Image (tube, rainbow, N blue to C red):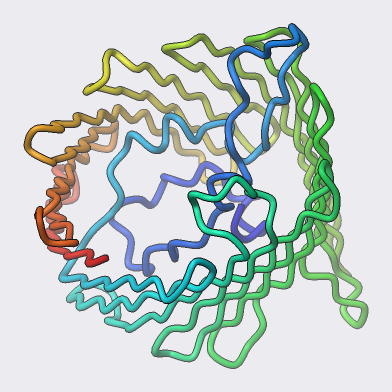
Length: 331
């Protein structure tokens, strides 16, 4: 889930895509098999596991285009079945340009049947900031995760997470930035329960303690899914986040998001869609929201070369701003 500090500032698209902050790194989420969505139907007739709390809105979010601005070059290299590296160079006139080195150490590749192998993921950019993940399956049902993030020479996040997946429920606990000297800590508890084959209910509790402040935020969550669509709602003291995902056919997927924040007193409604053209090796994602922002990203596979061309543009009609990006992903 990335840094748990971002939980108190949900929803996450309020300053997107026109933000001067660098885009999040590619590892700022669990691996695909870590947050894999629940199966629609189990052969034994029992209720399925609801999956992770962080993946409730994933189906809808994957439809929206990712921000691209300036010129970006990514080179991926698989050195062995368990060791992968990548280099990324980003040149921008809006945000600082940077170089980022990414490395992954896995005990099995994506084609292996063993999806529960531990993983070490590290990343460092040209400013000296370091991000590190350690993912470990302690048992068949218990998973542990550790995150360390530095901003140049300063530690900004040290986070420890444990998750237990039962037959029809998931429980997780996260401890972030514990500091004995400053007497501060952030605790996050997640729980999801499958009520029926399509209905999932649960909640999230965020507790923060410091020398001068102490408080908590409770968020309730619910998700109802069918084979072709998923509806999800999170609501609590910090705001509300609702999403609807629908797969029209093999080529077209659409998603709608509504986000409201009590902290910023802002609401945003977004509509996104994804169109796949297998014959042309192209995928197009587009979006429009209530802040008069329209954007789209086109990905073209340059066969027979092992490269993908990425072109994107975002227009803020209300703020009279334009962002155009071009990228190449090799490997």
